[in-house]
Structures are given as C-alpha cells and as structure tokens.
Image 1 (spheres, rainbow, N blue to C red):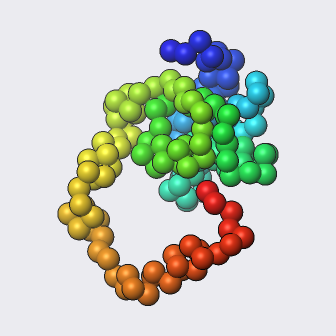
Image 2 (cartoon, rainbow, N blue to C red):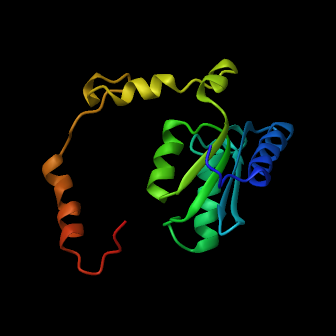
Length: 158
C-alpha cells in the first residue's frame, strides 16, 4: 500500500457504505480527495434512484467534478469501500483519478451477490460475440459527427 493513503478518508468511505445500507441503498461508499480535502462523496443509489449507473464511485466523481467545475480530476485520489466494477473503473480513468484505495475486493463483492466477473469476461470478446451482441450500423452516416468534431477549432479536448 502507498504511504500516501489516509485512514481518515477510507473510514469516511466505509461509513458512507454502512449508511447507504441503513438508508436502503447498496453497500458501497466512496470519497474523492484533492489536496487533503474531500471534494466528492457518493453512495450506491442504484435501487433508490432506479439508475443502474448510480454507483458510489460515479456519484462521487459527479460531485467532485461539480465541486471543481471541471471534468478533469487530475491530482485527486479515490477512496472506496470496494474494488471498482468495470463501469466505475472506466469512469475513474476518464476522470483521470490519480490513485484508488479500496476496502473489499471484487471477490468479496461476488460472495454477497455483486458479481461483475461476467462483464470482465465480455470485454475480451468481439462485440458480435458478447451476450448483448453489438453490430456496426450506419457507420458512414455516423462518421459525420466525428468529422465535425475533428474539424472544430474551438473544441475542448478530453
């Protein structure tokens, strides 16, 4: 473990996970820290909000980005009660989080009914061979938006 991990911040993420269970949410909590200060908190709100993307890490990222008024969370660390799922891991990379510290592992989550291993397995398959097959469609028409973006001089790259 890195020496820069903070027990205080991890305990806050764990407390959020416990509060989430008590309040009818999933058993996950997360905080995002920048310069020694919590700038985003999140709990699992999937069933409470009927939003399958409302995981603790995603909610914490949304709050931190709002706090900073920036989608780029470079220099921020994430403390989360559990190893992030594939969706959250993707969001963490897109947000440019510096480090992730987690409590429970994905194997621990699997034991209580949160099994993401099938998603990890799907990623390695070609799109048409996945459980939810995907196929290219109207690719020529879709290329127009990419062309417009590529030619746009005042775009904000991310």
